Length: 559
Image (tube, rainbow, N blue to C red):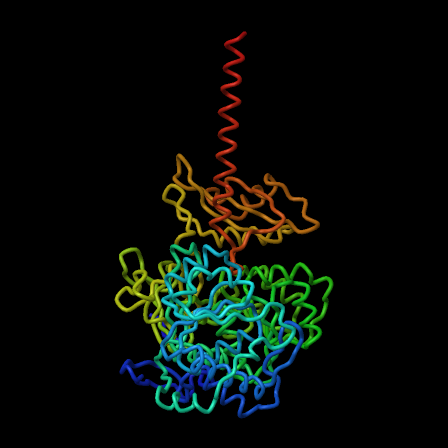
């Protein structure tokens, strides 16, 4: 077993103690933990009232004092006019905006449960999630009003004006003093639910993850201490704020520490780099896909001197890409993070600059308050360095899926669905997603390993490896590759290079080339789509081959 608290020094773990929650559950956390992210924000606003908290997509600035007033006004309208009470589920379908920030913190203030919806989803996908949410209220941008037309009779709705050139919540006001009376009667507690977030995947398989106030706050404080985040930080948020990374690891973290968040409504790699240079951004947390996209523009931005911290989570970040970032931005620290929606973002964090560490390729060490173990197929713990299923338990792990929508714990441990191992220093290495592990005739192949080898070949900019069905071996690896602008590699050349680096059974049976690697709505490599792409291609090739054989046989008969 690997215990987070034992792996960090006193600067990170100081003031940690066992705390009993109102529900009588005991957790290991920080002694002065705020009861909720809104209360933490309120404390920050009292310390830095005139400091800029948020800069929106149009470049408009909002101070902590200004934002606090907007939250106070809108929370009063929510409670007194719309009728939202503590514990109510409220759908948020809003783009990255000051309005999203206001609504989320206003809901947290009154103890309601925010249910963020992906703005990239289509109507059918959103409706599928809505039906699982038990939401009685909807707050959405006008663009999405039609998505919820069928639910008007069973919900109360707040529709934000289309193309608002100013703060869109201005009309929604109520008596703020009257709300104070209710808040005194219905005090928000640490173990009240704050978020209901749906995991990625098909909407029929998405699971609702219930996240409580204490889990958000433990995650935020852990990030703040480990990454040394202060009120001087300027963070850019160019990925959807409705994801756990955007909501907790960037927005929540900055509101707790007193930093400034710069919102981009949509992701654009060139705009991200322009804003980093323009605003003097110091903190950038993103996925491997996003870092791949900004690396493509590095020749146009040879220096970004203010960028102090690069943080990367959500998927495998190949060591070669980390080294590329370091060569480009040598003054920026790179920290790898491993986490899930179920871990409220951080599960492990790299304790130093991964780009110059002998442990590059690791996802870091468990944060304080969490415990890990690696088990085999029989559920027995394996020795250090041995690969197995990753299980985790602790403070910021969700207590369960909403309405028991999926099996959750194995004897009190969350099964992450990932395969990996710990080294003797307590560093976690992720080998693969369990579902992405390729079984070629009994030989197990980690897709991440092959992707990393491919990225080490000069001329390859990005890659994805998946397993597809095979008549003889059951499953074989295949690869989709994106070449750099100067890349002249062929499938035969790549296979030849791989033969010098790895066992023959691990070499992809087929290698296809693409202008870009498909990604999901959450900016992760879309392996399901890539797998289907290969299956469809091989099906067409087999049909063509059979047709050719039939035509050849027909011609012979006529002769």
